[in-house]
Amino acid sequence: MARATQPSTADLKRDFDALKADLGNLTKELRAFAQAQERSLSQRATETAQAAANGVVGTAQAAANGFLGATEGLRETGAQQAQNLRSLAEQATSGAEELVREHPAGTVAGAAAIGFLVGALAARR
Image (cartoon, rainbow, N blue to C red; front, side, top):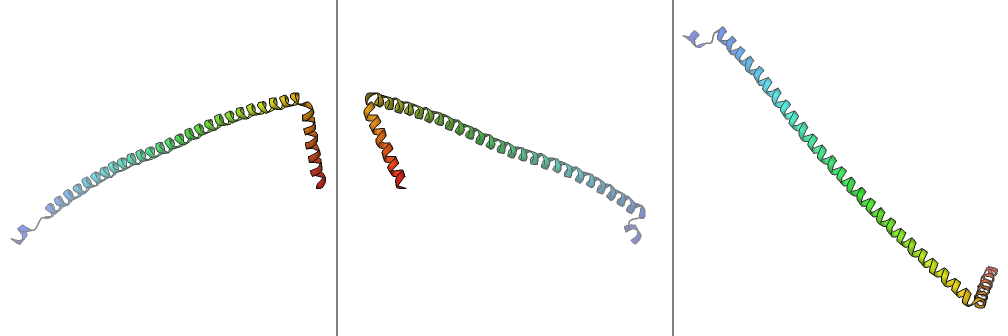
């Protein structure tokens, strides 16, 4: 009776072959799962990297546009200031010409006085 409860060599071989087949199937399933995980992680990494790159490019473009806008504003302000200075110089020149025409003797006397003063200060050194 004890022999009837013990598995035979054929039963052990059949069980061993079934176990071997199950391990082979499990290995295939694990390999497929790992490949799927790899594809999924790779896709997520690519999407994350692309989003980060797009963010950096967007920030760089915004900064460049801001810089160009500021540069254009400075250019316009500089041009306006140059025009203002040109206008003031023209007014001063026309005012000086008018003064010389109206008071030629006084202008010459004033110029001589300034020359005398500059010469006296230069001689003191």
